[in-house]
Length: 206
Image 1 (cartoon, one colour):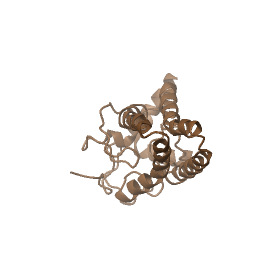
Image 2 (image 1 turned 120 degrees about the vertical axis):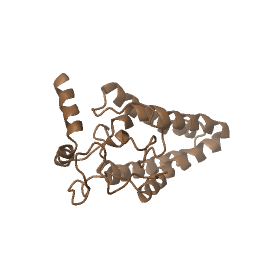
Image 3 (image 1 turned 45 degrees about the vertical axis):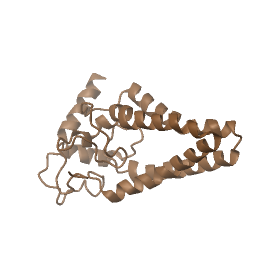
Image 4 (image 1 turned 90 degrees about the horizontal axis):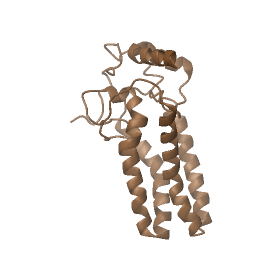
């Protein structure tokens, strides 16, 4: 069982035969590793743990719906609307995702090398907001304003880290949070012509 993709083996969407000397590797994260997974978990845990404490403080039972939201969204919905557009999703040697954000999630949807539709972007962003706001509702009901302030501070800090350390080097250009610059995107697409072709055909249709 492979925990992560071979860092020396090009992605299946890539036309290169070796990663040695590839200029894309220095600009984007084509492969993931344990350090990145731990970093991601530690970052998001700040918000999740604090939100969980706030819910427990109000009523331990309120944690259950939140857990269900996480499982349904990150294990099912997000995989469809966002992850299925990612080049990592095209890897056939594994039936689960080997990335930092949804590690271990089953690839039950078809790989789609095109941009996210407007509906998918709405579902993606709105679902995250609902999950994030849920603990705030109970913080307000319990009048725990210190928790609210700290929750916002932690969330802002984690969002900044994600954007600066991960979204800046992520190869899922379909994601609305992706901030990889245009030249780097074009460089990646030159190595992945099938993805580039799919994006060009979609532009013509639209």
